[in-house]
Length: 308
Image (cartoon, rainbow, N blue to C red; front, side, top):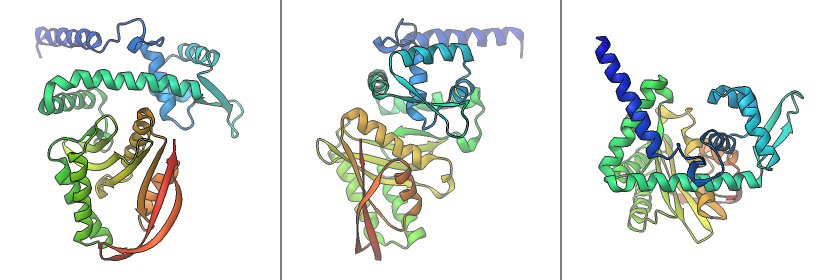
């Protein structure tokens, strides 16, 4: 490559960086009209996502200087946004977690961020949004050199997804559990009802995707003003073990909290052991079980709940 070509590409990348940082507002003194800098907001985000966060883990994963992170954490502790708990295995290490005030601060940031991105995407239409997100995925892969097995993402549903959800539920459950077409019919009814009555402020569908290939799905739908239902969790066989199922369920939980629901309910079957494990790990508890004959099989249906 000629030196002039490289210089032109360097200039193009720098111009894009200037455009994008201005476009998403990270040059402001406080991110999203908050008292937090971009780095502080990212630390809050990471603490909200991790069960047992440590300062060393945050430094490693975010590439932060230890002294800089220490100053941020001291500020958060002083403002009672973060609490430390000594590790029972290693007294020299502490686990970090958001307090109730920290969760509230993060929730506000998360809602404003989601609203600003939605406002940015809205004028583009579905096709433009898909092109933008695919281009961002290409940038991530090129700069991060992520292994193919880890390069999946979650996105909102778009035209064509409901047919895939119905088809793959029917095929997967027939192949793995011998369920008949009545299950596919039930999924079709749920998907059609979701589209006809879709309330974007209170409901969401996430599709797991890797390089254009759909790998999984989940829905969060309104049952009542205070209760949401988690429905149609599916992960394709070739994508299991990558954390997609847990990520889909966690997206439902985060969205339900931000939206103001007080509880999430779901209906599953006792034989669906991997899904039950995901629900239990996420904090759901089984509240009752009852035998029934459905989808051509004798099953034990289970009702699970998560209080938010």
